[in-house]
Length: 91
Image (cartoon, rainbow, N blue to C red; front, top):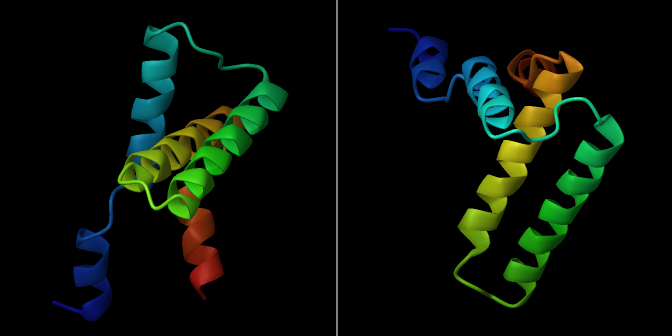
């Protein structure tokens, strides 16, 4: 097995995860159209994660997960394949 193949097997399938998160938003009646609102929610989640880190709270992992969920949901709303964009930026 090539090193890149092994590395890819250990990485979450972000494209599929985006779709699951988006469907969850639909199922729960959450916003899927107001992009401004989604950016504000993302900002709020990042702020909560920062505060948890700053205060050395054990909830930092949960807060970072919230950031990731919000970011992946926003990416799906915008039609952006975040996994592809990450791969492009990794060079």
